[in-house]
Length: 255
Image (cartoon, rainbow, N blue to C red; front, side, top):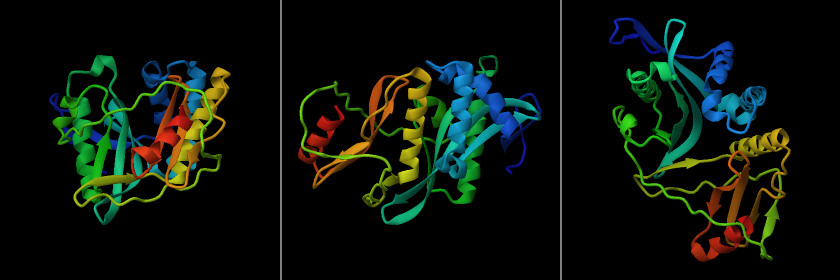
């Protein structure tokens, strides 16, 4: 484990992995932030069951920045196969960074990020990546830099489509090499299934239908998606198409 450090009050602060009991305690704390549309028992069940999934059981870790038993900030990391050009490696995605409201403004999350960078750099990770909903500034202090991102947002549409539907189980996405000097994360079939397990759970909790098909393919392109019932969206998880023309029937199928 990384060595303890001193925070401004002079008390030892340590990055460490959470125990199962501490994970459950953090679930209760984070419910107001991420439990939209769920009851507390449903949210707690969601967290337990998703941690038991094959992808997260082997590749997810819950981290605490703690002063003894006092948790100052927390987050989760997910292991991803990755490559930079032709060089294969491992990267980690950071999620669920959380500091309780009464502990914010003291730099705890920054110290958590700093410690994670040191830890995974020592392990030889190719990268740490995250999607920020609070902008890049809080993470820039720990060495992160922003990469432009964009979304295609398409309305629902009816009508026939000339595709072959993909049903579970999901096949493994192809590993596509990135240009030299460019990072690429390679999702696995079990990672995509984690999203589908989450979708099925929300369908049960909210008494809603889930998707009939998990993706579609043509002779030249393939797409996989999931129902994000928390926000009433269909999310395309992976789109493998050589150009916009090849992608069009798959996006039409998703609509």
